[in-house]
Amino acid sequence: MAFSLAHDVHIGDHLVRIRCAGTGRPVLLLHDIGGCGASFAGLTSGIVGIGREAVAPDLPGFAQSDPIDGGMPELVGFLQELTEQTIDGEVDIVGHGFGGYLALSLAADAPDRYRRIVLEDPMSPPPAGSRGTSRMTASMALNGAFTTVRRGRILQNVGGFGRAKTLLETLARPDQEWWDRLTAVRSEVLLLDLGHARSDHRSRLRQLENALLKVDHRDLSGETNAAEPGGAAHRALLEFMA
Image (cartoon, rainbow, N blue to C red; front, top):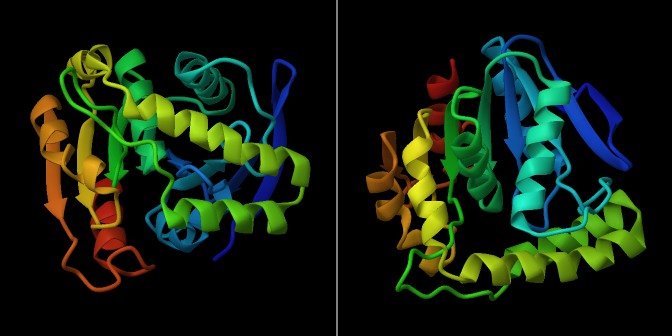
């Protein structure tokens, strides 16, 4: 099932493309670096089937959404404003890769706003004393190329590779303050290890489990086609969100 509606909203002077389907309590879908909101199309029918609304924006600077100035704090603040202006009431989030980092950042800044969070192979910065890598994976590059060709806005999306590199470089730097802020997260969290994350991010999944108050960590890396529609990850996600 594809998204039933795609529309543009303006946050200040910046356009954001949002795809929606269904009705009910919203589930905010945050994609990985190099992706777009449409990458969640395979999950849409499941979310609608449990009586929920799927809401999938293109992150700023990717696919059809305008880039914004600034770094991570500005990006998180922008998404917080986007959520406040477009979604009423409590929000659940699904964050894939970089979207997982954003989901936790949003919940740490506004813990009363977000009820449940699903993290699929989430990215995170290293805690103090650790090291990360800013290398872009092949899947990120391929997803970015696909988005550039299929979604249009060629110049913007070519520039998206530079933005992706900057985001990865930021996430490679230790950020103990971010880890300390996780103590504010009161959402129930489902942490899914699909085995597709970069090795440095997979090694921090256990640290995330220990840092969060209410978390269910499931290792699905040995499951065949776990991330496919109807696979183990989608079944776990829909059960958690129902």
